[in-house]
Length: 422
Ligand code: GDP
Ligand code: IMO
Ligand code: MG
Image (cartoon, rainbow, N blue to C red; front, side, top):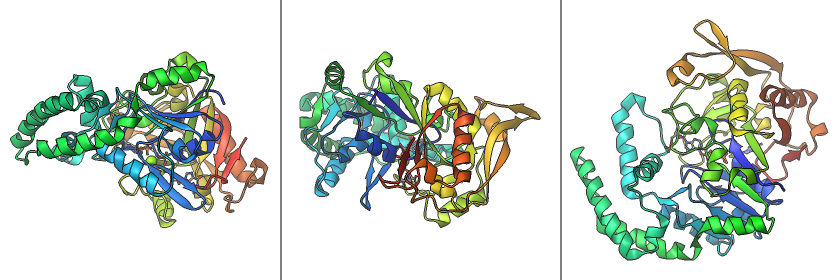
Protein backbone atom coordinates (compact mmCIF):
# COMPACT_ATOMS: atom_id res chain seq x y z
CA UNK A 1 0.00 0.00 0.00
CA UNK A 2 1.35 3.47 -0.84
CA UNK A 3 1.92 5.81 2.13
CA UNK A 4 -1.54 7.29 2.57
CA UNK A 5 -3.08 10.10 4.56
CA UNK A 6 -6.71 9.55 5.40
CA UNK A 7 -8.56 12.79 6.10
CA UNK A 8 -12.10 13.67 7.02
CA UNK A 9 -13.41 15.87 4.23
CA UNK A 10 -16.34 17.39 6.13
CA UNK A 11 -16.85 18.26 9.84
CA UNK A 12 -15.58 15.01 11.39
CA UNK A 13 -17.30 11.69 12.09
CA UNK A 14 -17.17 10.75 8.42
CA UNK A 15 -16.47 7.12 9.31
CA UNK A 16 -12.68 7.46 9.34
CA UNK A 17 -12.24 4.77 12.00
CA UNK A 18 -14.13 2.21 9.99
CA UNK A 19 -12.15 2.94 6.81
CA UNK A 20 -8.83 2.94 8.70
CA UNK A 21 -9.64 -0.46 10.18
CA UNK A 22 -10.49 -1.74 6.70
CA UNK A 23 -7.31 -0.37 5.12
CA UNK A 24 -4.99 -1.36 7.97
CA UNK A 25 -5.05 -4.86 6.55
CA UNK A 26 -2.82 -3.52 3.74
CA UNK A 27 -0.63 -1.13 5.78
CA UNK A 28 2.19 -1.79 8.25
CA UNK A 29 1.87 1.20 10.54
CA UNK A 30 -1.06 3.44 11.48
CA UNK A 31 -0.18 6.96 12.68
CA UNK A 32 -2.25 9.56 14.51
CA UNK A 33 -0.70 13.00 14.04
CA UNK A 34 -3.12 15.57 15.47
CA UNK A 35 -6.10 16.07 17.74
CA UNK A 36 -6.60 14.30 21.02
CA UNK A 37 -9.37 12.49 22.82
CA UNK A 38 -11.89 14.87 21.28
CA UNK A 39 -11.87 12.27 18.49
CA UNK A 40 -14.16 9.25 18.63
CA UNK A 41 -13.52 6.63 15.96
CA UNK A 42 -15.93 3.72 15.83
CA UNK A 43 -15.05 0.28 14.55
CA UNK A 44 -17.43 -2.65 14.48
CA UNK A 45 -15.93 -6.14 14.17
CA UNK A 46 -18.15 -9.18 14.26
CA UNK A 47 -20.88 -7.19 15.99
CA UNK A 48 -18.44 -5.92 18.68
CA UNK A 49 -18.21 -2.14 18.84
CA UNK A 50 -14.99 -0.32 19.75
CA UNK A 51 -14.67 3.46 20.12
CA UNK A 52 -11.12 4.77 20.01
CA UNK A 53 -10.17 8.28 21.09
CA UNK A 54 -6.36 8.48 21.18
CA UNK A 55 -5.16 5.08 20.06
CA UNK A 56 -5.03 4.59 16.28
CA UNK A 57 -7.80 2.39 14.89
CA UNK A 58 -5.15 0.01 13.55
CA UNK A 59 -4.74 -1.42 17.09
CA UNK A 60 -7.52 -3.91 16.40
CA UNK A 61 -5.31 -5.78 13.91
CA UNK A 62 -2.75 -7.71 15.92
CA UNK A 63 0.24 -7.64 13.64
CA UNK A 64 0.21 -3.91 12.93
CA UNK A 65 2.04 -1.11 14.71
CA UNK A 66 0.31 2.04 15.91
CA UNK A 67 1.97 5.39 16.52
CA UNK A 68 0.68 8.41 18.42
CA UNK A 69 2.75 11.17 16.86
CA UNK A 70 4.21 14.41 18.17
CA UNK A 71 1.26 16.49 16.90
CA UNK A 72 -1.30 14.75 19.11
CA UNK A 73 -2.25 16.22 22.50
CA UNK A 74 -2.44 13.43 25.05
CA UNK A 75 -4.38 13.21 28.26
CA UNK A 76 -2.23 10.49 29.91
CA UNK A 77 -4.90 9.41 32.40
CA UNK A 78 -7.45 9.03 29.63
CA UNK A 79 -4.94 7.17 27.45
CA UNK A 80 -4.21 4.68 30.25
CA UNK A 81 -7.97 4.15 30.59
CA UNK A 82 -8.23 3.47 26.87
CA UNK A 83 -5.33 1.00 26.93
CA UNK A 84 -6.80 -0.82 29.96
CA UNK A 85 -10.22 -0.93 28.27
CA UNK A 86 -8.73 -2.61 25.20
CA UNK A 87 -6.64 -5.05 27.26
CA UNK A 88 -9.77 -6.03 29.20
CA UNK A 89 -11.40 -6.91 25.89
CA UNK A 90 -8.49 -9.10 24.83
CA UNK A 91 -6.92 -6.60 22.41
CA UNK A 92 -3.12 -6.66 22.35
CA UNK A 93 -1.53 -3.38 23.43
CA UNK A 94 2.19 -3.72 23.97
CA UNK A 95 5.09 -3.37 21.58
CA UNK A 96 2.52 -2.56 18.88
CA UNK A 97 1.94 0.93 20.33
CA UNK A 98 4.44 3.80 20.30
CA UNK A 99 3.88 7.23 21.79
CA UNK A 100 5.90 10.29 20.83
CA UNK A 101 7.99 11.82 23.58
CA UNK A 102 7.36 15.22 21.94
CA UNK A 103 3.57 15.02 22.16
CA UNK A 104 2.05 17.67 24.42
CA UNK A 105 0.00 16.78 27.47
CA UNK A 106 -3.57 17.73 28.22
CA UNK A 107 -3.83 18.64 31.90
CA UNK A 108 -6.86 19.14 34.16
CA UNK A 109 -6.49 22.94 34.00
CA UNK A 110 -6.90 22.72 30.21
CA UNK A 111 -10.26 21.06 30.72
CA UNK A 112 -11.27 23.68 33.31
CA UNK A 113 -10.29 26.50 30.94
CA UNK A 114 -12.07 24.84 28.01
CA UNK A 115 -15.25 24.77 30.07
CA UNK A 116 -14.76 28.30 31.42
CA UNK A 117 -14.26 29.78 27.95
CA UNK A 118 -17.35 28.09 26.63
CA UNK A 119 -19.41 29.51 29.51
CA UNK A 120 -17.90 32.97 28.92
CA UNK A 121 -18.84 32.82 25.23
CA UNK A 122 -22.48 32.15 26.13
CA UNK A 123 -24.61 31.93 22.99
CA UNK A 124 -21.44 32.29 20.88
CA UNK A 125 -19.92 29.11 22.31
CA UNK A 126 -18.09 26.68 20.00
CA UNK A 127 -19.69 23.57 21.43
CA UNK A 128 -16.34 21.92 22.18
CA UNK A 129 -15.98 18.39 23.48
CA UNK A 130 -14.66 19.93 26.76
CA UNK A 131 -11.62 17.69 26.63
CA UNK A 132 -9.23 20.64 27.06
CA UNK A 133 -7.96 20.43 23.48
CA UNK A 134 -7.98 24.17 22.67
CA UNK A 135 -6.17 25.27 25.86
CA UNK A 136 -3.61 22.43 25.47
CA UNK A 137 -2.73 23.53 21.92
CA UNK A 138 -2.72 27.15 23.12
CA UNK A 139 -0.09 26.26 25.73
CA UNK A 140 1.92 24.47 23.05
CA UNK A 141 1.87 27.61 20.87
CA UNK A 142 2.61 29.82 23.90
CA UNK A 143 5.56 27.56 24.75
CA UNK A 144 4.22 26.85 28.23
CA UNK A 145 3.13 23.29 27.47
CA UNK A 146 4.33 20.13 29.15
CA UNK A 147 5.31 17.20 26.98
CA UNK A 148 5.49 13.45 27.27
CA UNK A 149 9.28 13.82 27.66
CA UNK A 150 8.68 15.90 30.80
CA UNK A 151 6.34 13.28 32.22
CA UNK A 152 9.10 10.70 31.76
CA UNK A 153 11.32 12.77 34.13
CA UNK A 154 9.33 12.91 37.40
CA UNK A 155 11.47 15.66 38.96
CA UNK A 156 11.24 17.90 35.92
CA UNK A 157 7.53 17.20 35.60
CA UNK A 158 6.88 17.95 39.28
CA UNK A 159 8.59 21.34 39.07
CA UNK A 160 6.94 22.38 35.80
CA UNK A 161 3.50 21.13 36.76
CA UNK A 162 3.58 22.80 40.17
CA UNK A 163 4.34 26.12 38.50
CA UNK A 164 1.64 25.73 35.82
CA UNK A 165 -1.02 24.65 38.33
CA UNK A 166 -0.21 27.74 40.40
CA UNK A 167 -0.54 30.02 37.37
CA UNK A 168 -3.74 28.41 36.16
CA UNK A 169 -5.29 28.38 39.63
CA UNK A 170 -4.85 32.17 39.69
CA UNK A 171 -6.92 32.37 36.51
CA UNK A 172 -9.58 30.02 37.85
CA UNK A 173 -9.77 31.91 41.15
CA UNK A 174 -10.13 35.24 39.33
CA UNK A 175 -13.28 33.80 37.74
CA UNK A 176 -14.64 32.63 41.08
CA UNK A 177 -13.83 28.98 40.37
CA UNK A 178 -12.32 26.52 42.83
CA UNK A 179 -8.56 25.98 42.42
CA UNK A 180 -7.30 22.58 41.33
CA UNK A 181 -5.50 20.24 43.69
CA UNK A 182 -1.93 20.21 42.38
CA UNK A 183 -0.85 17.27 44.58
CA UNK A 184 -3.66 15.07 43.28
CA UNK A 185 -2.88 15.96 39.66
CA UNK A 186 0.78 15.17 40.23
CA UNK A 187 -0.07 11.82 41.77
CA UNK A 188 -2.49 10.83 38.99
CA UNK A 189 -0.22 11.97 36.16
CA UNK A 190 2.98 10.44 37.54
CA UNK A 191 1.15 7.13 37.97
CA UNK A 192 -0.18 7.32 34.40
CA UNK A 193 3.31 8.29 33.20
CA UNK A 194 4.81 5.13 34.70
CA UNK A 195 2.18 3.02 32.91
CA UNK A 196 2.92 4.78 29.63
CA UNK A 197 6.72 4.69 29.98
CA UNK A 198 7.21 1.44 27.97
CA UNK A 199 5.44 3.02 24.97
CA UNK A 200 7.16 6.42 24.93
CA UNK A 201 9.93 6.96 22.40
CA UNK A 202 11.19 9.17 19.60
CA UNK A 203 8.58 8.20 17.02
CA UNK A 204 10.20 10.33 14.29
CA UNK A 205 13.24 8.04 14.33
CA UNK A 206 10.97 4.98 14.40
CA UNK A 207 8.95 6.17 11.41
CA UNK A 208 12.03 7.02 9.35
CA UNK A 209 13.53 3.58 10.03
CA UNK A 210 10.23 2.08 8.92
CA UNK A 211 10.38 4.14 5.72
CA UNK A 212 13.91 2.84 5.06
CA UNK A 213 12.51 -0.68 5.42
CA UNK A 214 9.82 0.23 2.86
CA UNK A 215 7.05 -0.28 5.37
CA UNK A 216 3.80 1.43 4.48
CA UNK A 217 2.29 4.17 6.58
CA UNK A 218 -1.37 4.99 6.97
CA UNK A 219 -2.13 8.32 8.65
CA UNK A 220 -5.36 8.42 10.57
CA UNK A 221 -6.76 11.93 10.47
CA UNK A 222 -8.94 13.06 13.33
CA UNK A 223 -11.78 15.58 13.03
CA UNK A 224 -12.39 16.92 9.52
CA UNK A 225 -11.31 19.59 7.05
CA UNK A 226 -13.82 22.25 8.16
CA UNK A 227 -12.73 21.86 11.77
CA UNK A 228 -9.15 22.76 10.74
CA UNK A 229 -7.71 25.73 12.66
CA UNK A 230 -6.63 27.39 9.36
CA UNK A 231 -9.05 26.12 6.73
CA UNK A 232 -12.16 25.45 8.78
CA UNK A 233 -15.15 27.55 9.75
CA UNK A 234 -13.17 29.65 12.23
CA UNK A 235 -13.77 30.16 15.15
CA UNK A 236 -16.06 27.09 15.13
CA UNK A 237 -13.13 24.73 14.68
CA UNK A 238 -10.79 22.57 16.70
CA UNK A 239 -7.25 23.73 17.48
CA UNK A 240 -5.15 21.58 15.17
CA UNK A 241 -4.48 21.18 11.47
CA UNK A 242 -6.88 18.44 10.55
CA UNK A 243 -6.00 18.76 6.86
CA UNK A 244 -3.39 16.61 5.13
CA UNK A 245 -0.48 18.92 5.97
CA UNK A 246 -1.01 18.16 9.65
CA UNK A 247 0.07 14.58 9.04
CA UNK A 248 3.60 15.71 8.16
CA UNK A 249 4.12 18.25 10.92
CA UNK A 250 2.43 15.97 13.43
CA UNK A 251 4.61 12.96 12.68
CA UNK A 252 7.91 14.19 11.26
CA UNK A 253 7.31 12.34 7.99
CA UNK A 254 8.13 14.77 5.17
CA UNK A 255 5.49 15.61 2.51
CA UNK A 256 7.42 13.96 -0.34
CA UNK A 257 7.11 10.58 1.40
CA UNK A 258 3.32 10.70 1.08
CA UNK A 259 1.92 9.01 -2.01
CA UNK A 260 -1.81 9.42 -1.71
CA UNK A 261 -4.53 11.28 0.18
CA UNK A 262 -7.81 9.52 0.76
CA UNK A 263 -10.74 11.77 1.66
CA UNK A 264 -13.52 10.20 3.68
CA UNK A 265 -16.92 11.71 2.93
CA UNK A 266 -20.25 10.77 4.38
CA UNK A 267 -22.97 10.40 1.74
CA UNK A 268 -24.66 13.28 3.54
CA UNK A 269 -23.20 15.81 6.00
CA UNK A 270 -23.09 15.92 9.80
CA UNK A 271 -21.71 18.37 12.29
CA UNK A 272 -21.52 18.32 16.12
CA UNK A 273 -21.22 21.59 17.97
CA UNK A 274 -21.98 25.10 16.79
CA UNK A 275 -21.09 26.91 13.60
CA UNK A 276 -22.38 27.50 10.08
CA UNK A 277 -23.74 24.55 8.12
CA UNK A 278 -25.25 25.54 4.78
CA UNK A 279 -27.00 22.28 3.95
CA UNK A 280 -28.37 21.50 7.42
CA UNK A 281 -31.80 19.93 7.12
CA UNK A 282 -34.12 19.25 10.02
CA UNK A 283 -36.10 16.62 8.10
CA UNK A 284 -32.97 14.60 7.30
CA UNK A 285 -31.73 15.01 10.90
CA UNK A 286 -35.03 13.65 12.19
CA UNK A 287 -34.96 10.72 9.75
CA UNK A 288 -31.40 9.71 10.69
CA UNK A 289 -31.95 10.16 14.43
CA UNK A 290 -35.13 8.09 14.23
CA UNK A 291 -32.97 5.31 12.74
CA UNK A 292 -30.76 5.57 15.87
CA UNK A 293 -27.92 7.07 13.85
CA UNK A 294 -25.75 10.14 14.21
CA UNK A 295 -25.12 10.43 17.91
CA UNK A 296 -21.58 11.55 18.86
CA UNK A 297 -19.04 8.81 19.65
CA UNK A 298 -17.25 11.02 22.22
CA UNK A 299 -19.96 13.17 23.82
CA UNK A 300 -23.15 11.35 22.83
CA UNK A 301 -24.59 14.61 21.45
CA UNK A 302 -27.04 14.35 18.56
CA UNK A 303 -25.22 15.34 15.39
CA UNK A 304 -26.75 18.00 13.15
CA UNK A 305 -27.44 16.49 9.73
CA UNK A 306 -27.84 17.84 6.23
CA UNK A 307 -27.40 17.11 2.55
CA UNK A 308 -24.11 16.38 0.81
CA UNK A 309 -22.30 19.64 0.16
CA UNK A 310 -20.22 19.45 -3.01
CA UNK A 311 -19.09 23.07 -2.64
CA UNK A 312 -17.28 22.38 0.62
CA UNK A 313 -16.04 18.90 -0.31
CA UNK A 314 -14.59 20.23 -3.59
CA UNK A 315 -12.70 22.77 -1.49
CA UNK A 316 -11.61 19.94 0.80
CA UNK A 317 -10.35 17.96 -2.16
CA UNK A 318 -8.25 20.96 -3.20
CA UNK A 319 -6.82 21.84 0.23
CA UNK A 320 -5.91 18.24 1.11
CA UNK A 321 -4.86 17.08 -2.33
CA UNK A 322 -7.41 14.29 -2.14
CA UNK A 323 -6.88 11.87 -5.02
CA UNK A 324 -9.28 9.17 -3.83
CA UNK A 325 -12.52 9.22 -1.93
CA UNK A 326 -14.27 6.80 0.37
CA UNK A 327 -18.01 7.44 0.61
CA UNK A 328 -19.49 6.14 3.85
CA UNK A 329 -22.98 5.72 5.26
CA UNK A 330 -24.56 5.44 1.83
CA UNK A 331 -27.12 3.17 3.49
CA UNK A 332 -28.30 6.16 5.56
CA UNK A 333 -30.06 7.42 2.43
CA UNK A 334 -31.70 4.09 1.55
CA UNK A 335 -35.18 5.29 2.50
CA UNK A 336 -34.93 8.85 1.18
CA UNK A 337 -37.22 9.58 -1.78
CA UNK A 338 -35.51 12.66 -3.20
CA UNK A 339 -31.86 13.34 -2.42
CA UNK A 340 -30.36 16.83 -2.60
CA UNK A 341 -26.76 17.73 -3.42
CA UNK A 342 -25.56 21.28 -2.90
CA UNK A 343 -23.63 22.41 -6.00
CA UNK A 344 -23.25 26.15 -5.29
CA UNK A 345 -24.03 28.77 -2.66
CA UNK A 346 -26.04 31.93 -3.09
CA UNK A 347 -24.57 34.80 -1.09
CA UNK A 348 -26.16 38.26 -1.24
CA UNK A 349 -27.69 37.51 -4.62
CA UNK A 350 -24.44 36.15 -6.12
CA UNK A 351 -23.81 32.51 -6.93
CA UNK A 352 -20.42 31.27 -5.67
CA UNK A 353 -18.74 27.89 -5.98
CA UNK A 354 -16.43 28.01 -2.94
CA UNK A 355 -17.07 28.45 0.78
CA UNK A 356 -16.48 32.04 1.96
CA UNK A 357 -13.72 32.48 4.55
CA UNK A 358 -15.85 34.37 7.04
CA UNK A 359 -18.19 32.24 9.14
CA UNK A 360 -20.85 34.99 9.20
CA UNK A 361 -20.81 35.03 5.39
CA UNK A 362 -21.02 31.26 5.30
CA UNK A 363 -23.96 31.37 7.70
CA UNK A 364 -25.76 33.64 5.21
CA UNK A 365 -25.13 31.31 2.25
CA UNK A 366 -28.12 29.55 0.80
CA UNK A 367 -27.50 26.20 -0.83
CA UNK A 368 -28.24 25.73 -4.53
CA UNK A 369 -29.38 22.14 -4.91
CA UNK A 370 -29.69 19.57 -7.61
CA UNK A 371 -32.08 16.71 -6.90
CA UNK A 372 -31.52 13.04 -7.54
CA UNK A 373 -34.11 10.31 -7.14
CA UNK A 374 -33.57 7.99 -4.17
CA UNK A 375 -33.09 4.25 -4.75
CA UNK A 376 -35.51 3.23 -1.96
CA UNK A 377 -33.84 -0.15 -1.47
CA UNK A 378 -31.55 -1.58 1.18
CA UNK A 379 -27.86 -1.36 0.21
CA UNK A 380 -26.28 -2.96 3.28
CA UNK A 381 -25.96 -6.39 1.67
CA UNK A 382 -24.15 -5.21 -1.49
CA UNK A 383 -20.58 -6.49 -1.72
CA UNK A 384 -19.73 -5.32 -5.23
CA UNK A 385 -20.33 -1.98 -6.88
CA UNK A 386 -22.52 -3.71 -9.43
CA UNK A 387 -24.75 -4.99 -6.60
CA UNK A 388 -25.75 -1.45 -5.59
CA UNK A 389 -29.06 -0.16 -6.98
CA UNK A 390 -28.43 1.79 -10.23
CA UNK A 391 -29.67 5.06 -8.66
CA UNK A 392 -27.24 4.61 -5.74
CA UNK A 393 -24.40 4.11 -8.24
CA UNK A 394 -25.46 7.29 -10.05
CA UNK A 395 -25.45 9.16 -6.74
CA UNK A 396 -21.92 8.17 -5.69
CA UNK A 397 -20.58 8.76 -9.20
CA UNK A 398 -22.11 12.24 -9.09
CA UNK A 399 -20.29 12.94 -5.82
CA UNK A 400 -17.02 11.81 -7.38
CA UNK A 401 -17.62 13.95 -10.45
CA UNK A 402 -18.55 17.05 -8.42
CA UNK A 403 -15.63 16.78 -6.00
CA UNK A 404 -13.12 15.85 -8.68
CA UNK A 405 -11.65 12.81 -6.91
CA UNK A 406 -11.67 9.17 -7.89
CA UNK A 407 -14.13 6.87 -6.16
CA UNK A 408 -12.17 4.26 -4.23
CA UNK A 409 -14.40 2.83 -1.47
CA UNK A 410 -18.13 2.81 -0.80
CA UNK A 411 -19.30 1.85 2.70
CA UNK A 412 -22.80 0.59 3.28
CA UNK A 413 -22.69 -0.41 6.94
CA UNK A 414 -20.47 -0.16 10.04
CA UNK A 415 -18.97 -3.66 9.69
CA UNK A 416 -15.76 -4.66 7.91
CA UNK A 417 -17.57 -6.71 5.30
CA UNK A 418 -19.91 -3.85 4.44
CA UNK A 419 -17.26 -2.21 2.34
CA UNK A 420 -17.04 -2.08 -1.45
CA UNK A 421 -13.64 -1.56 -3.05
CA UNK A 422 -13.59 -0.09 -6.53
P1 GDP B 1 -15.06 8.91 12.70
O1 GDP B 1 -14.92 9.85 13.83
O2 GDP B 1 -14.84 9.56 11.38
O3 GDP B 1 -14.26 7.66 12.85
O4 GDP B 1 -16.61 8.46 12.68
P2 GDP B 1 -17.50 8.06 13.98
O5 GDP B 1 -17.10 6.73 14.43
O6 GDP B 1 -17.51 9.16 14.96
O7 GDP B 1 -18.94 8.06 13.33
C1 GDP B 1 -19.25 7.28 12.23
C2 GDP B 1 -20.40 6.37 12.61
O8 GDP B 1 -20.89 5.76 11.44
C3 GDP B 1 -20.00 5.22 13.51
O9 GDP B 1 -21.09 4.88 14.32
C4 GDP B 1 -19.68 4.08 12.53
O10 GDP B 1 -19.83 2.80 13.09
C5 GDP B 1 -20.73 4.35 11.50
N1 GDP B 1 -20.43 3.95 10.13
C6 GDP B 1 -19.28 4.12 9.40
N2 GDP B 1 -19.49 3.78 8.13
C7 GDP B 1 -20.79 3.40 8.05
C8 GDP B 1 -21.63 2.98 6.98
O11 GDP B 1 -21.23 2.91 5.82
N3 GDP B 1 -22.93 2.68 7.29
C9 GDP B 1 -23.42 2.74 8.55
N4 GDP B 1 -24.68 2.41 8.76
N5 GDP B 1 -22.66 3.17 9.57
C10 GDP B 1 -21.38 3.50 9.32
P1 IMO C 1 -13.57 12.72 14.98
O1 IMO C 1 -12.11 12.44 14.89
C1 IMO C 1 -16.71 15.74 15.11
C2 IMO C 1 -15.79 19.48 17.15
C3 IMO C 1 -16.54 19.81 18.42
C4 IMO C 1 -16.60 21.31 18.30
C5 IMO C 1 -15.25 21.67 17.72
C6 IMO C 1 -14.19 22.07 18.74
O2 IMO C 1 -14.34 11.73 15.76
O3 IMO C 1 -14.14 13.02 13.64
P2 IMO C 1 -12.75 20.67 20.49
O4 IMO C 1 -13.18 19.83 21.65
O5 IMO C 1 -11.94 19.95 19.48
O6 IMO C 1 -12.12 21.96 20.90
O7 IMO C 1 -14.14 21.08 19.77
O8 IMO C 1 -14.80 20.51 17.03
N1 IMO C 1 -15.07 18.18 17.14
C7 IMO C 1 -15.48 17.13 16.45
N2 IMO C 1 -16.59 16.94 15.71
N3 IMO C 1 -15.77 14.77 15.19
C8 IMO C 1 -14.64 14.95 15.90
O9 IMO C 1 -13.64 14.06 15.88
C9 IMO C 1 -14.47 16.17 16.61
N4 IMO C 1 -13.52 16.65 17.41
C10 IMO C 1 -13.89 17.89 17.71
O10 IMO C 1 -17.82 19.22 18.43
O11 IMO C 1 -17.58 21.69 17.38
MG1 MG D 1 -15.99 10.54 15.46
